[in-house]
Image (cartoon, rainbow, N blue to C red; front, side, top):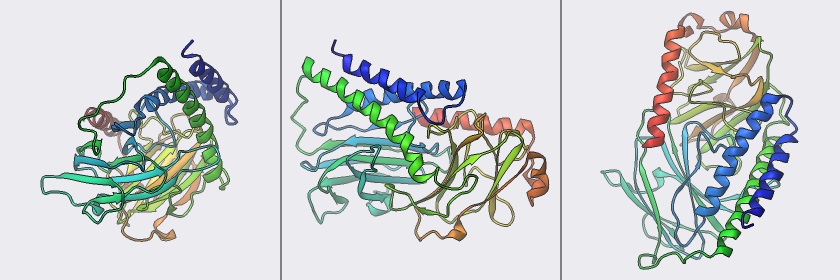
Length: 386
């Protein structure tokens, strides 16, 4: 059958999930199969969206197609390109904190991170007073808003980053220069079969890669610690990150103290052992500097725990006593130093009140915390439909 190659890949993918080294319980497996469903959807979409001659921006990840410790504060879009052609990206700048562009060579694999050939944010382009812009990608040129496609350029990634979740997203389109009077060729049965085969390869590569990725950047670190800020491997030139992994009992809390940065975007999140974000819609598993409570000394204190410490900056582990923790700083205009980074202390849950120096002003009622969750649901729903 035409879909046999993809069916075989799905069976192999299920085996990868079942054999994942971190699986210890039925819940781990159930979450893995949910992750698999999202990966199947994403792989099919990417295989069918692949067309450097007639590209368009597709959503790279979302609440149901998670991968690679997706940032809850970011909308990701990608379009397939080729260094043999010229492209025009047009759009309007929304009110999000950051809008960035990155050109990748190759793809993520179990043994490598793709090269980032070009990465910049909207500070590098001219934007009209009404928010509209036009960016050209292709051969070297001295024209304004023009960026060279290096050899092997294969994907253009665009990120819209929210610090305030009530911000408005912009618009984005891409076209190949010279395609106005052309149209894609009619697909044949053989071409469709090839796309199913490609989707299967993407699915297996995706799962294997992002099970291996934490071993490179997280699991070799001491547990319940976080690194000093560092440039994100394979990431944006204006993004720093601090990574760690945690392992707590349900009667423990990890208190993370970090200065409120001068970077326009500063965000924290938790991820599951599948290396994807936890439920950030119905639970407070992430916070930006705009969303967090800032103490009088200019620091943000996050309390990561399973049990509710009844403080505003509670980061819910939602049953995940093990997982990944990540800070990101974006749109930076200076080098980040260890003084900008987090410090970590693990305490018993009943010691949270005595450990937090501003506990009396950190407290929050169940009703007010529930209101924060409702704001998250509304903001994500608006963002996804915007």
